[in-house]
Length: 245
Image (cartoon, rainbow, N blue to C red; front, side, top):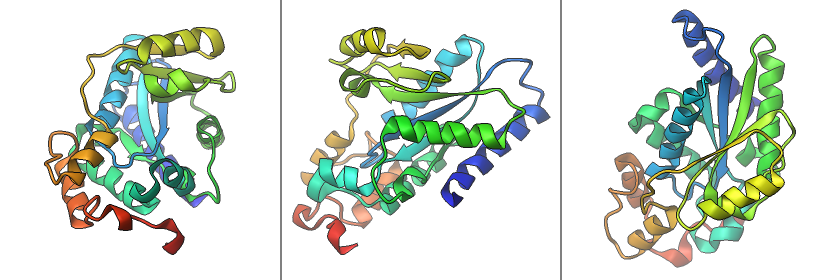
């Protein structure tokens, strides 16, 4: 579980910080886990962490940390085909984005999911993080929340073990469907946060790169530079053939 140990080390650092500055004050602690392709990561991926953090802190939680868990290569290849980026590239760009954003002060990557032998469902990924946090920090009452956009909550049932919460951030054309789905099928503590949405998506990034247009307004400059460096979308027929890696 060396990949999980990286997450636990980051969380331990954040817990030391709240103890050092006496920030806890009996407030319940919260940690986010968010999954997805992140093919590639963009500004809205980090924006939802900030939106969800503000939501929980308005309800008296103290948000300690958040983890970005990119999906397994097989899942991304199934979705993106020839445009799939390898897990190593996606993790590298998550690091680049976090180094450029204030969210990097409390959000980190989690490489556990992508390092497994096969694809793992997001509910099981979240449960694994929950179990390891509970095992390694038994003295802390930390509630783990799964964080996602309304598009995922609209098409997937949010069936988690009872002690995991869910925070869904609104997304155009999906918020109402997600709300109905949560009310019908999610027995867990859950919150739906509506925001003024932007037009940022990984799909938009790929489309602009394919047309050799700027993506600087959609993602972080270091991510944009790295995508250009590796020639992503310049020769679509040759972009990451996982059978050769």
